[in-house]
Amino acid sequence: KGDGTPQLSFWSYHGVETSVSYDLRKAEVSSGSFADASKTVSVLLSNQDDKGVWKLVKIDLAKFKGSKVKVRFNFDSKDTFANTTPGWFIDDLKVEMAKAKP
Image 1: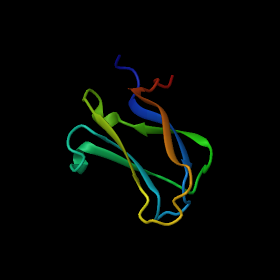
Image 2: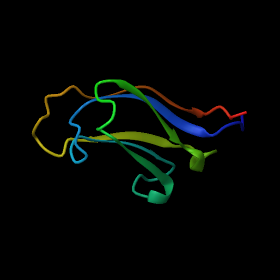
Image 3: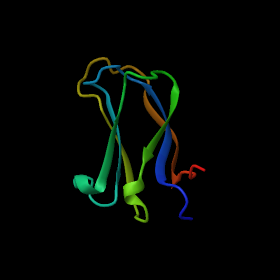
């Protein structure tokens, strides 16, 4: 249906360093090449919020309405230190139309 806005949603759990420079977690959606910024939405997730709990993440995909997309997730520890934590987990990934607000 044409109602609502397309969105990517997923549950995210991180047990990684709380640094803004290490253990970087990124969700990306593209209708073409991930190298083409005009066809890609890239969201860097904060490590400073909600460590050790599941959090629902929603990413607006309005710019891709009617297009096929690819989704990828990137994790970069940036170093070889403090890497004994549980890591990053993703669950219940969905690309769907968000319900239109009344």
